[in-house]
Length: 200
Image (cartoon, rainbow, N blue to C red):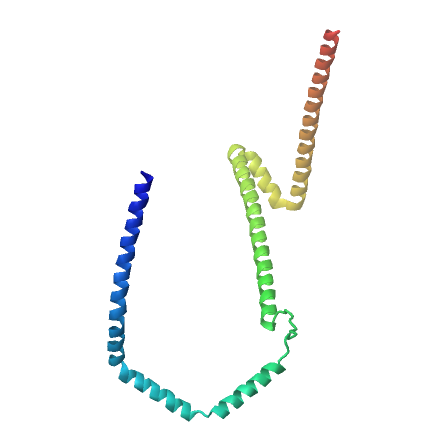
């Protein structure tokens, strides 16, 4: 079976080779004819090109061309193989002022932004105080009249008294917070003592 397959493959290859041989003979016979027709069509063009090459050769003297080539070779031979280059980087006059301008613009922008945030925070605080005073005025009109009268009569003394009263209230609130924390700590200590006694 394998022998028959091999014989079939060999015969197929022989047929292919015969086909190639026939095609090559056709190409060999037709190619010279094609070249002849091509050369006949473009003979005038090739003659013109050849004539131009001859006139160009006559225009330029071989000796001058050779002399220029020799001069060029001499210049190239005198050029050193390694050329030392000094390089240093620096900012030009315009770039220094540009960088300074950008830095100044950044500082001014940052300062303006910080000022705007501070003023916004102060505005919020003042609005909150004004709202609180408005609430006091609405709920306690007599107290509000006393505050307004005190501010009209002697604002500095009234503000100093108010600040002292606020400090006193803050101290009382802090003392209450400490007392509550002490009570919580004392209660936690009592609970721990009871746990220890009950564990015995």
